[in-house]
Structure formats: C-alpha cells, structure tokens
Image 1 (tube, rainbow, N blue to C red):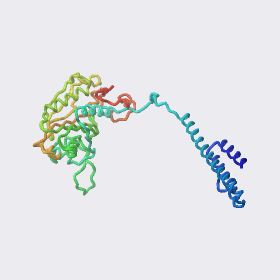
Image 2 (image 1 turned 180 degrees about the vertical axis):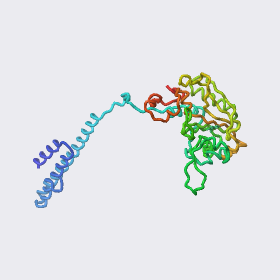
Image 3 (image 1 turned 30 degrees about the vertical axis):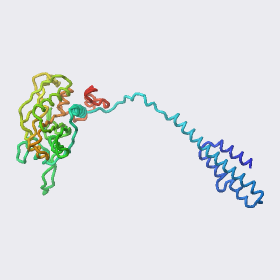
Image 4 (image 1 turned 135 degrees about the horizontal axis):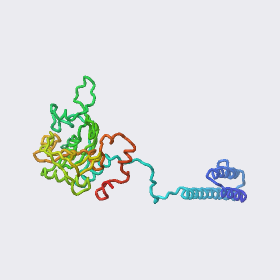
Length: 357
Ligand code: PHE
C-alpha cells in the first residue's frame, strides 16, 4: 500500500495539466483503477484482514482524491497567473491616432444647435421623413388647393393606380413634427426637431435633400418678443460672436401669424463665403407666432396656449459658419472634402467646452 501511495502521489505531483490528472485518477481510483480493484479483493479476506485493509484502502483513496484536487487547483492558479502575466493591457496609454472618419459638417452643426437650445430648455423631438400629407400640409393650415403646396416642389410617393388614399410625401420641412410633438406631449411645450427634408430644387444653395431644425415653444404668455430674443441669443451663441447682423423681414407662412424671415449679412467675394461682412444677405430661417388653427390641429386649446415656431436651415448655417461656398458638395461624399471640412469625432460640441474648437 505504501508503494501504491508513493507511486500515485509522485505521478500527481508531476502532472502537467488537467488531462494528465484525469488519466491518473482513472488509473488509481476509477471504476477499474488499481485501488478500486484492490478494494474488491476485500471480499475474499478474512474478517481480521479486512478490518485492517479496509480502512487503510479507504484512507489511501481519500488521500489520492485530495491530492488530485489540490494539484488541480494549483494548476488552475498557475494558468490564471500566466494569463494575467501575458494578457495585460495598459489602459492609461493615449489612443492611437489612426487615419479615421470625420464628423460631417451637417452632423456637427446639428450637435451645436442642439447644445444651444438644450441650454434654453428645449428638448429634441423627431418625426418620420415620409409623412402623410395631413401632417406635412393640412394640419399646418395648408389646405389642398393652397399655392404653398406647389411652391414647395414636393416629392410625392408613388401610389398604385386605383389606390386613392391620400398620398404620402417626402416631408418638405420639419414643421410636421410640431404637430406630432403637440399630440405626444401637450402644452406647455419646448422642443426642437432636427432632421432631413426634401424639395425638388438644385443650385449653389439648394439641394433636393437638406436639413432643418424646427423649434416650437408653447405656453400661456409667449409673445413675438420671446421669439426675437431666442433667435438672437441662438445666432450669437452659434456664430460664437457678440454681434451678428440680422435682418428680420416680415413674411408669410400659412402656419404662423405674424411671420418673419431672418437673414444674415454675408459676402461671397472671391468665391469664399464670409459671415458678418459684405452686401449680401443669406436667408437662414422662417419663424412666427404659431397659427391658432395649427395649435388646434395639435390637439391643444389655442384660447389657452400660444407660442412661436421657427425653422432653421442647418446646411446654410454650416455654409456660413465654416465658409463652405457650395451646398451641393455636402452630399458628394468626396473624401478630400470630408477630410477638409469634417470634424474630429471626439470633440463633442458643448457651450462650456466650446462649440467648434
Ligand atoms: N417650415 C418653414 C419652411 O420650411 C419654416 C418655418 C418653420 C416658418 C416654422 C415658420 C415657422 O420654410
């Protein structure tokens, strides 16, 4: 028995891995293992012999099992040590500057605008780009015969012949999200709604898909003065200057009354676009006091609530702020353009950290 014990304990001590340990276990204490077979011989012994051999065999078996378990744990610890030694990672190393993508000016400006309005208490609402003509037109006080439908150069979605449900359109502005936000949140309400819009138009300052950010503020005592203040604060914060020359022009939209459009002084001289100087004006937004019919279409009582709305052209803001003279290039996916005008992915615009470092 001492020989058996010495043999197996030595083997266990030498075992290099779990598979070797398992082989030893089978050979020693497995069903047909050497020690198990010895235990079967107990039946043929005299009672006196059995009294000695039985407990001794059991003790040997226990000892071998314990040695197997201890060796197994030691091997696992060693394996873990080895992994910890070889698989370490220095998380304090600086990120590797690789050639990488950039943030498109439209995304950058959308983030900047969102940061500014968030500071003024506006939250973000969104709506679908494929709209029913009710949300895009009727609910905004633009009935079927209204010339504004034609003026907007609307893209209509295809309807199979004979299908005479009203058509869906590619939304021509973000104003339908005003209605959706009113329906979803009621009043009082302060939201901005950024997103893509579509009109059949194409030249240096127009593309068939472009971006707007809608603003809507409803409460019991909102006036045109609040609208003017918010827009001026916005423009100053966005262009990161104390003074930008703005021109408020009386205008007309079916969904606001009264209405105003806002232009910014700029110059296109020598093919570069500069904001705040020169003799040109670039229209950047439409605005006004929300028409009572629109408030009612949103399910809110216009006798109690009133407010202002505006729609700003995001792409045009980007052109003005970053001196990009042609809107069409925004959507060419030219890598050289994207690298030149794009922004670093990790510089998230905030009012405190800086909008456009
Ligand atoms: N929806 C208008 C447009 O696209 C802009 C606008 C929005 C005007 C809200 C007034 C109020 O031209």
